[in-house]
Image (cartoon, rainbow, N blue to C red; front, side):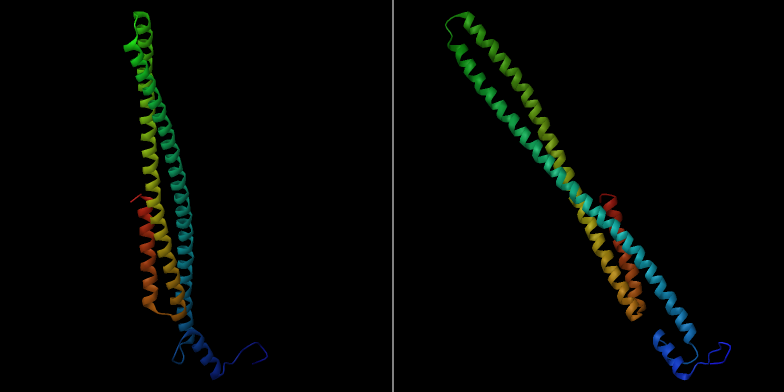
Amino acid sequence: MSGHGFHVHGPHDHELEHAATGGHGHGHGDAAEGAGMSVTGKIAVCTAAIATIGAIFAYMGGATQANAGLYKNNAAIKKTEASNQWNYFQSKSTKQALAEFARDTATDDARRQGWQVKVTRYEQEKGEIQAAAKKLEEESVRWDASSEEQMHQHHRWAQATTVLQVSIALAAIALLTRRKWLERAMYGVALAGIAIGALAALHI
């Protein structure tokens, strides 16, 4: 060490540099260190990007799962309402049958006419109730279909998130081992995860 801040490296300093950067020869420590930092930085940036995309996919997976539960609940409500309408329809049918019996057994025209008015009214009410029940059943079917679609989408988002997590794990191993094939595998798996996420976004 000189008095002007000039540092003279000893042989052990070079060996420590090589050990830190994975180098094995002499005279190439700086180049190996620069290359190592470049690869490390690249993998670190890619890992951060993959983690960000994975967080978005995880959020979308949770949102679609919540939607699926909500839509399934709406389908159950509409199905219950439709069932109530059919029970009401059955009640009107029973009243109509009793009114028809009373009409057919009436001994004078005035009573017969009165019962006929009730039969006609019950028949009209039954038609309205039946239309309402069928409409509710159709709404229930639509909500069920929407729920199934959301669950399918949820599974896609979950698959994409899992694949990206595998990619992040490969990135960590690649950083530790400096294996080029692991780095390439990390990129390949990440692309596969993004592709599955694209399928989820496209409802495929």
